[in-house]
Image (cartoon, rainbow, N blue to C red; front, side, top):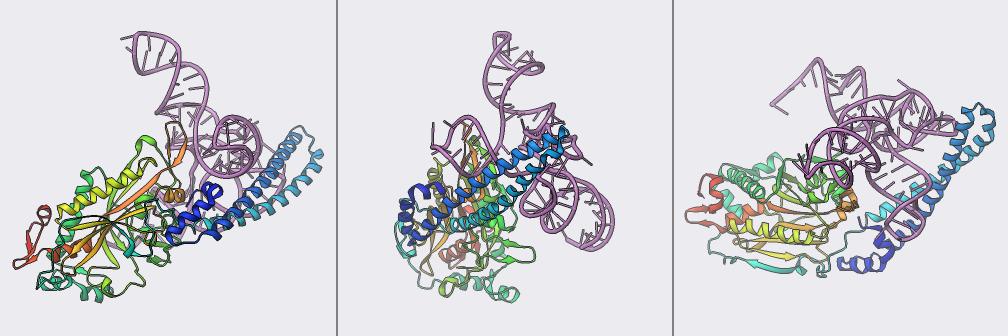
Length: 423
RNA sequence: GGAGAGGUGGCCGAGUGGUCUAAGGCGCACGCCUGGAAAGCGUGUAUCCGUCACAAGCGGGUCAAGGGUUCGAAUCCCUUUCUCUCCGCCA
């Protein structure tokens, strides 16, 4: 959520900045300011009413104590009236507050000034690229063919057991997955992240806290019998560890990491995007999250991008970093860098990480604060990034390292796989 | 799934209708004391909303959450939720 203060005092600026997302917030902002004014006026009236009622109750108490209970009759009458009035005011307050909240959650985060305008992926800005995208070898096979050739991933079997988008990893394929998870977690630990194993099912409050609800309702698997959601990313349980809490300033930044399975319904996806491992309903990912001081969060964002770059270097994968444009930016994010690796057989870039600074947007929803040395409580900033998403890393590893002798495993992974090639 | 007991401040814990403006303790912060420290003593120490300058002060809400009874609720009633114990089932 945005800070209501900025909407009150700089509504025009909010509207202007949201235009970068191709959003016209004029109406929402207008209604919000109105609801805010009504809410405050009603609150004041209700408070005054309650203050008087409290005063009366005190006086009546005094009378009873000194045995003059019968003198309280008149006061009781006024009290009853106040109570009636309070009920009306409370109802009004509840209703205007509900409207206010509903409007508040409709507004996405304000894009950082560096976010370029644009409508789609095509308008994202290239920040830099590292490594040489290999030209397609003449007989290069896409990873789904390699998977079949070496019998390491079975898509049909997964489809039988569950459905499309639920692959079955087998033999060295399964072992390679496990190796990647262990590698990523070890690296995260070395970089100072605390390893967690969070729940894979979360409640509504958590899904709301990180901004999946209500914006992405329908993208998550939902278990109505228990009203729980399967996590689309470990970001949700991880960030929500700090929901409703007040950290000490010196505890910042908090750095945590988790491996988790991720579940996404991916309603509306189709075509080459969903071929093979490119887009799945269930996949594995290691996620890193930081809770940072507002003054340092952009440094932290850079640090996270550099950390993920390091992982990709160790995996010897060519990659590029893009800055998402307004139209591609996630609802809760102020600034996002995507990391893409080049899959040489498909000859396309695959997104393997998305690193975002949410500033105080998630914190405002989940009341994540820190106490400054001066004793003042303020909202912390939250950030997260994939480090990394496995299926596309696997796809690129397979495609880029294929050769006559099979699939070559990068040096960094060999201690984890226990073999240096698949073939 | 069945039966029972509970949820009070950062933590422990008292509190069964008005003096709760929540006792007491621990922890923490600051001060006194000390060569320095410990002990001791003193002071302070939740959060949200409103008013307002995002100050002080003042008003209101919050004793798991929501609703109700009452002039008045941490305390009584209802619903929900979570925790613990026992039984059942089970990796």
